[in-house]
Length: 447
Image 1 (tube, one colour):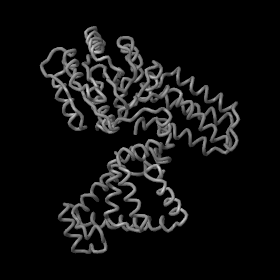
Image 2: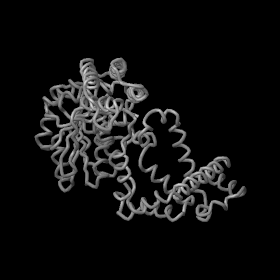
Image 3: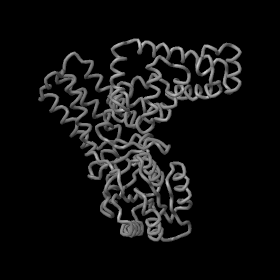
Image 4: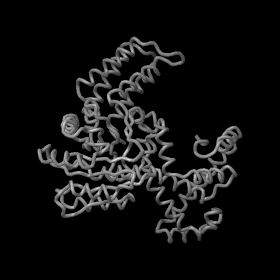
């Protein structure tokens, strides 16, 4: 998870509040010091850290809890509020016709981010085109073309053409009928004069609605000056922070960029093209503190699973049908939603402590193994798992390239899941409620 070290430290501070018998000056001071230590270790600016903790102390010691809330709950809410504040205002990119120009220095992840952004809009149902306007880096066009092919969006480029402006002019004409045009511009090792002039010339031709600065989070607090310098040069409208999954300096980058008033719209949380998260400060802090993010989970589900799939599987289970086919469908839907660790961080209580106890990689591997085994079964066996005795176990193991013990492990998991489903469906109140929600129609009804 993003900034897992910071998250764990902050969750420990919240546990200290939650487990206390009463809220007093000593507790608040202790928790304040814990928060200071956690934020400083995550490279957040010292002045900002002191401002945050001072405000936490002031509010915790002077504000009375709202009606129906305990003192402990109120202090936890104050900590949450003050952490959200340091990340600045939320901004989301519009889902409509627009031109986006990506800018940034070399090695920041600009080209990959252009592809990730293309995938994001493509998944939202928009027609997207990528323009390869980096004329200085060898094989820049080839890299963008490979990414475009993977995410299913068009790419325009002209290898060998030395003028970025000419490439953009032609690309804009080629993609005039598309909804979103994303321009990947050249980078440099520093803010050199020729880089700025080229970006300005491209901006003049493209007249972009968005100028997105891509920054590597590992630069920490230096992200602030870089963002400001690019903003002064070309008028940055928003920021994408990359490599947030692998750096202890991510907290510094987040807080530094927010101070420049250039809002962060996405964060890169991995190497895969789906590893780009919309940056919503309140949801980010909620996941960081282990409070979950059910709204993002539901949005992920809607993007990855059609209403027909969800309703069909639910109806089968409601009717008492739960064969290996239904189990396979559930596993496939879960896999389509993304990495298991990311999904667990969206569930309240699973973002921290429980994730530490569960071997995520092992669980993900087990799910992959189960699907391979089921691919080696006949339709009859999938519909009626009771048929799978010793000889069939051996045949399925050979066909899937797995051990017989793995086939038996799958059958044990199936039997456990079937019992759990029966137990759930045996609860009349829950079943009646679910039926009522389903009659409301679609995934909205299932919320």
